Image (tube, rainbow, N blue to C red; front, side):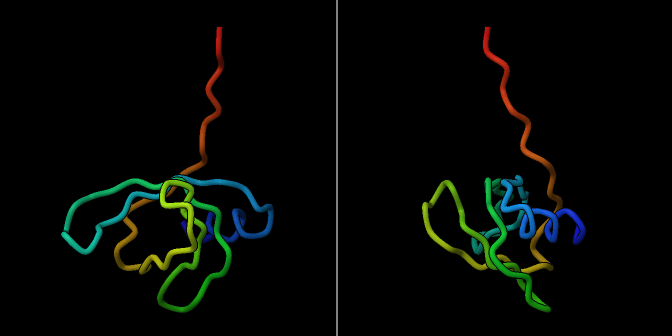
Length: 71
């Protein structure tokens, strides 16, 4: 997981993260990692359109964003 976060930061690419929010609900966000700290990730959230902090302990998983292919 940390490798994918580092890759997003270096390549300035979007990734999807699944995490537990303050209401203990599982949420997904499309983000671009800005900086990695020891206990959290600073990332631009494309849904909220602002930079947000995500705690490492609350991130359940992350993955590459798949591009949709139109007909």
